[in-house]
Length: 72
Image (cartoon, rainbow, N blue to C red; front, side):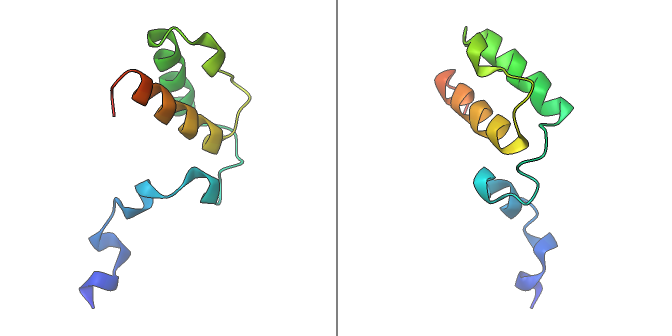
């Protein structure tokens, strides 16, 4: 029964597809904006940063830039 407790696997939710996030259409967080801006500058891809995107889109762009930079 302990396996059914969501707190027993606190990182499981971190693997959820951004398109499935309940709050995915909310504006990106300040932390996401900061990280996305930093990564876009490091990857020399300033088009990747857009301060009007959603949390889900920011997550996808962060993942893509991390892969491009070999940070994943």
